[in-house]
Image (cartoon, rainbow, N blue to C red; front, side, top):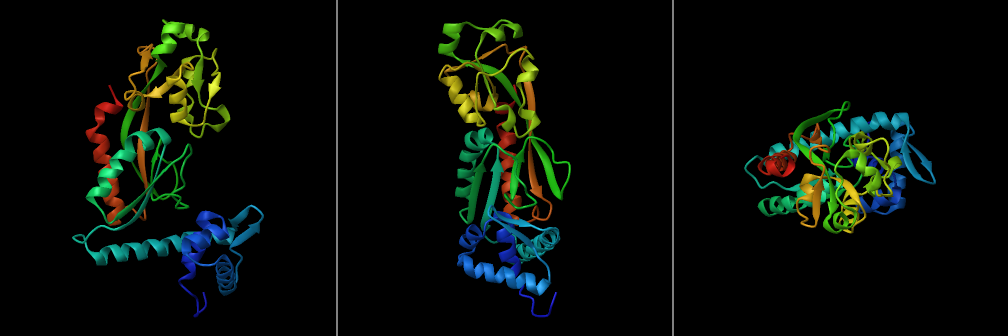
Length: 299
């Protein structure tokens, strides 16, 4: 780096690397996109390196950009940790925490819980992102994420929140009309609901082969809440988490002994962020909320 390197350029670089869009990054930074473009060009000239490939679909990191990303994230973490240390543990917790979570868990369990956390910590700005996909903490798509599996690589810290059980459910109206299956082979005579096969983002969600190789869903969605609403509307039988189905009196579990699946939720935090006060507060809160509601997730 040259002597006149602008350290503020790392913030500009990170905004583009995380959004992949110049205009969106400029909006997040509160500056004009042409200004941001000039600043990034000046950064590349100062480093004598091309950090981004510019295409019609957006900005993507070059190999040199990937290396600079790791360095920029380390600098960002050090700055955040320094601010946290200086503010002191006794001061009010403040700042933004973005939490990524699967749709079902995020919308039904985590959303109301975060209201309580926000009320207890009014200085926190909480962002809950519920999408049917995995989140990249390395790219800082979220500060922490609830995952269906423990990550196998990356500078990530993970601990298991809980195991949770799933069963096969149908609406009362559907079961009155079509009858209750008595065995797994009876499922061939029922409408099955499930995930769109090529949009299953985690192998833990591929339930149908565990029921039978002879059945296929007739109505599918990438969204778990959508599948639940299809079930409530009488569309057929669907594998649903117990914590999601229990709130709906119109649903009845069928074949409880034959269909009992167990999956896990893991809370994942980037190792460089886990000691920040606001991250630690959120992590401890979510962990305790899940522990207290243990019976909701498992029989």
